[in-house]
Image 1 (cartoon, one colour):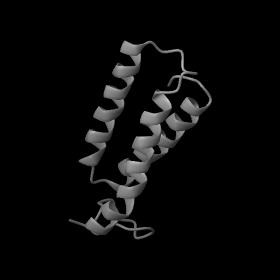
Image 2: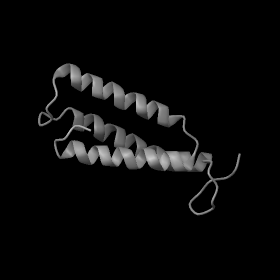
Image 3: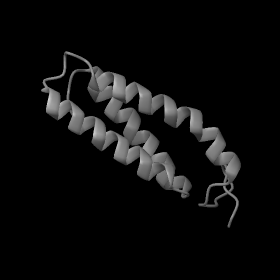
Length: 91
């Protein structure tokens, strides 16, 4: 497996890369789940549960990802989604 890292040009994540991203991923996951509970979102109970299940599935899928580019894309998408939720919009 090729070594990853900041500017090395390699595409595979090392254990260090994964460990460095773990707190960020967990924080984004928790923030998104909290934002989905907001009463400002126009969602019923069933829709809220469905969105939480969708979020959980995406993060479980992302936990198995080893490509640095895909990990970066997933984090960018999570940040964008959180921004939409904080504005009261459903992604």
